[in-house]
Length: 84
Image 1 (cartoon, one colour):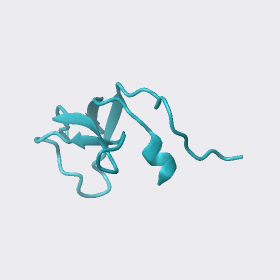
Image 2 (cartoon, helix red, strand yellow):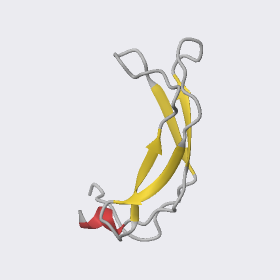
Image 3 (tube, helix red, strand yellow):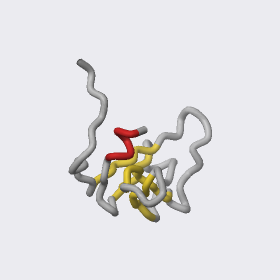
Image 4 (cartoon, helix red, strand yellow):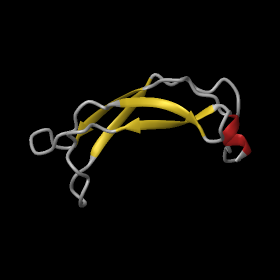
């Protein structure tokens, strides 16, 4: 967990929810997008998204929504595993 907990993200983000079929399914406005720490009192390294209240349930293989996340910068420090 050490490399992941080193990441430090901005405190807020933006998410747009787009349904796969805009006629048959609803997505709506995402209620909240924020970053939270994995370990208490540590860096914010997870994205927490509260989905739209009126969103069509994701039941079955047909209903798919696309989430577009923006407003996050590449962490100023930390690293991830890279293939050699």
